[in-house]
Image 1 (cartoon, rainbow, N blue to C red):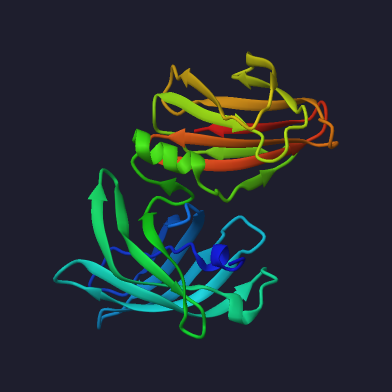
Image 2 (cartoon, rainbow, N blue to C red; image 1 turned 90 degrees about the vertical axis):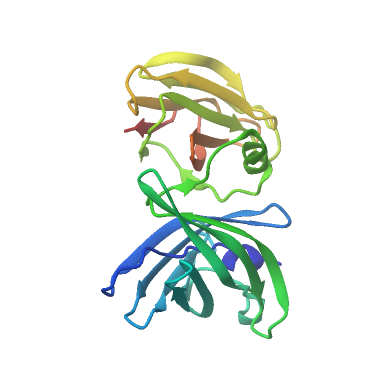
Length: 275
């Protein structure tokens, strides 16, 4: 099941034109066991409506894997199908027989505001054909995001899922495209509570002083005077009992989530620039 996480995140590209054109979609896959895995799909739709390209699983993680894909586009129903057929490259230490290859026979393209969204079900199979996973796919044409409409049930599901976090360290400045007029983000300790303490600033204003990081998620909400403008700074006040100040952060921008994990020592900071 270790490799389940690896191939589990699928990213199909869509939007058909009469010409061959490379498409790119990013998103996530949720499994029946509530795993949430980042995934990207990049492909071309050919004149005969076949699809070829590659998928990228665990985009920011230690198991990042690229796989070749092929499939078809049904022009009449606006439905896409694809399957991963072979790995192109991987950082994973898993054995070949442990890889779980994703396929889907019914991915529906929808348009929502300025984005195309691709949703459907998937199954995963080991190279020997045995079932290794199944669940739902959600992908969007908006790059560098993990997107879905955020309602309470969905948000609860996301917060309880096994997210794939991008690691940030001292002096990192992360740019986040932001659309909503309110900043929502969560901070928590994703492992053992070891007395990590942080101070949180927004546009150089202290909004949380010496916040003790617990396993329970702390929700922070900040109205934005200007849509999509602001800088969040996370500063380590203590390094905790284990010698590192390690904090899970999840930014939620209406339809988009951005998961990070900051690893700092006392006095160090990371910056998140909302644009």
